[in-house]
Length: 311
Ligand SMILES: Nc1ncnc2c1ncn2[C@@H]1O[C@H](COP(=O)(O)OP(=O)(O)OP(=O)(O)O)[C@@H](O)[C@H]1O
Image 1 (cartoon, rainbow, N blue to C red):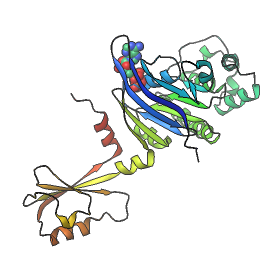
Image 2 (image 1 turned 90 degrees about the horizontal axis):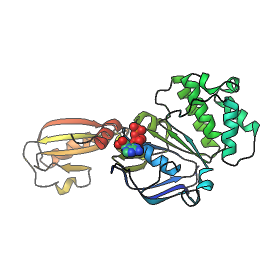
Image 3 (image 1 turned 90 degrees about the vertical axis):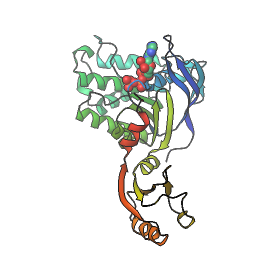
Image 4 (image 1 turned 45 degrees about the vertical axis):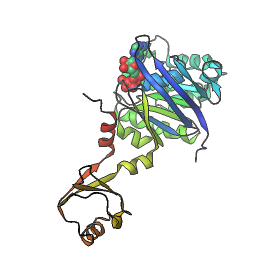
């Protein structure tokens, strides 16, 4: 199991772009060593801005970031050499071969050549037979693989994947997740951004939800799933109540503002929903109801409600 030691520590980070746009507002986040963390949010939420700050591509307007204890501004080289970044887009279409690009990339971070490592990376990504190909001659999917290989060339402790599966075919997606799992087993910390809930759910140990520059939820995935995998049963009452009766105070019940309905929250995964005893106890309390209505609070629904921008 991963140690609970932060490998990335983000403190009160804000970013206002030159346009005056506030892309990040007072973000605090600790990433634990060896975890897979998913930063989940819609387009424009600030995910790329946040990882660009940690990777030293964008300067924060305020706040501090430590990567394995190194301040990413004052000790940029030390911090950056621990980090691998797979960006969203391939920024250069180069005449260079895959192999020389990887070797160069490794050298950039001050690492001595290690052809064995580079070979392993290329084989893992099914790129070995393309090692002498010029990058510009590769297909889009292959270029994505090169981007990943490049990010791994210097054996980073911390790997950022920005929207890793956007526009990626099934095979690459599969290979990518295999690789992510393998890297995690080797102790690499992985931070990925996504706007797909399924992706966060499938891959991550913890999930952070970002909305309009604010980190609004950070939760262990299982806890989040449990919270979100609950259902609500709305009980429309014959007569309104002033409050939850004493005899029902041990139950997860809330009363609507007008007192006309009771809402019971239960776990859809549980063996027993508790609905039968609930109805029996309502009866014992002399509370009659005219209608029951259950609604699902799936992760998707909650997420949509979390990130929905008021029109
Ligand atoms: N250089 C810039 N100057 C001004 N505004 C910018 C700049 N870069 C990004 N923004 C704005 O900041 C906001 C956050 O952008 P960011 O790329 O961080 O979002 P994101 O969550 O990564 O979205 P996506 O999923 O589309 O990549 C957006 O509204 C974007 O338009």
